[in-house]
Image 1 (tube, rainbow, N blue to C red):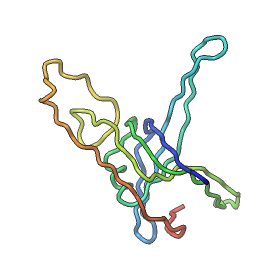
Image 2: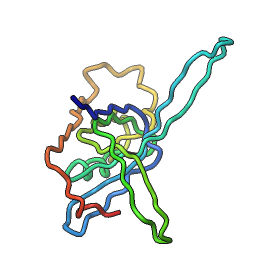
Image 3: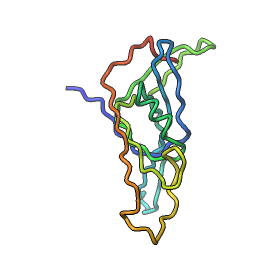
Image 4: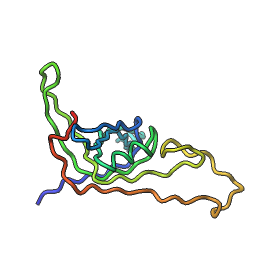
Length: 153
């Protein structure tokens, strides 16, 4: 039995990039940073940041491009994929990325225009919980397989 499943919860390092394949399919890409904290043998707090390249397809790519912003929180469910190609100078190149099957957008800051991302402003201490608008966060799944001919890179 084999399993290739990844869950990443982190913050975007830049706004997503949206492109189209020659066949017209939408493809988006963005990077997510995750932090790990631990105590070393001496009891000193240590941290490390990992950066993950994410690829999203179809309607999910459009949603990511429209709503995700640098600094925004996102949960990505997908699979690891390694691709190899020859660059313009003829050098062999290789990259490992996460192909998103589902993305869930993080909380939407109040008072922002258009997108998810960044830190939420301080809450109004005089507002009640019923005053806040509760907005459903879209979850989009991709069940179709992506053809290699559709890859823009």
